[in-house]
Length: 57
Ligand SMILES: [Zn+2]
Image (cartoon, rainbow, N blue to C red; front, side, top):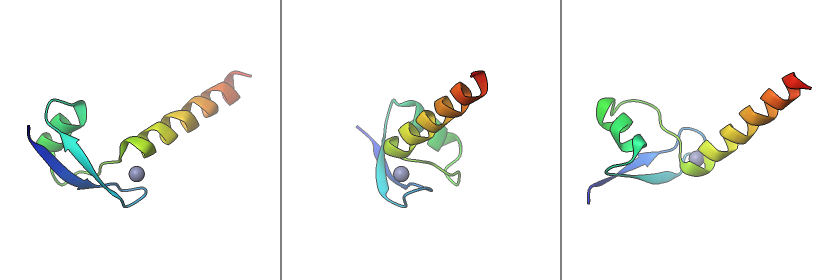
């Protein structure tokens, strides 16, 4: 199994991108791109959802 060590742009931690995942594909397409770890992904998603709920109410 191939995996790459990538720097998260938000928390600056190093996380692994594992072969076969969506992020791995993105990484292979653009290795100079900016990537975020799963923790930050989750936070962003939560914030986005909150923002969306705020707009709906
Ligand atoms: Zn992060």
